[in-house]
Image 1 (cartoon, rainbow, N blue to C red):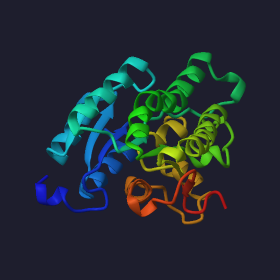
Image 2 (cartoon, rainbow, N blue to C red; image 1 turned 90 degrees about the horizontal axis):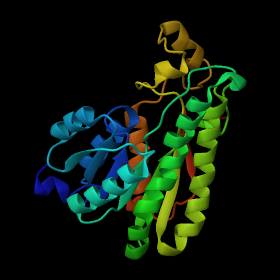
Image 3 (cartoon, helix red, strand yellow; image 1 turned 90 degrees about the vertical axis):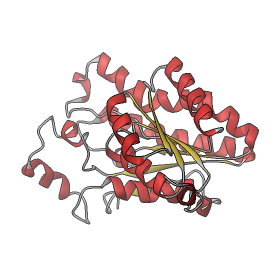
Length: 257
């Protein structure tokens, strides 16, 4: 990206971390952020995928391997992002895992622990290592990617739904506590998306019939795309949303109506 490109856009001059950014919603957010002038740290457990996206997006990005459920990895991510951009203006907690559909009492303890470690604990860990600098700067935007499942749960996804309900509540709690430092915290609630996670929610089999069952629950009759989430993310993390905090924005085609 050229200096001229970086000087323009709704996120011009901002430094952002996007977790889980090698694919899906995270890749869409990272791509749109760069187009809007931000420098972006592409963080993902899949380093090869993160590096491929960084190579595609250019010098305004860097790729870092991070397991967001591990404190040491998140601490290293915060340090590397600060070294790359000089500061951290925006944090997008996008990394997450899904759950295969099954009765709630049959979910293995290890899977339950993994769901909460990646989907919930990661938000705590990134706050632990990134919020102090935002407080010191008296500025920052944090965006948590939750889900419509946290508002209107689907059956047989109980513990996944619970993690996303936790994220929505955490977003509101963070927003009210951090407002005095001018740090805004919001969330996005996507409906089922056309991403690599989709097959997980359908029991590992992505078929036209399985997609149609999901589409019948979405009034606009389509899945969420990475571009849909990226457009909302740019707004919520930009100065255009300077008076918006504590919101969990449904980008769901009417699913929660």
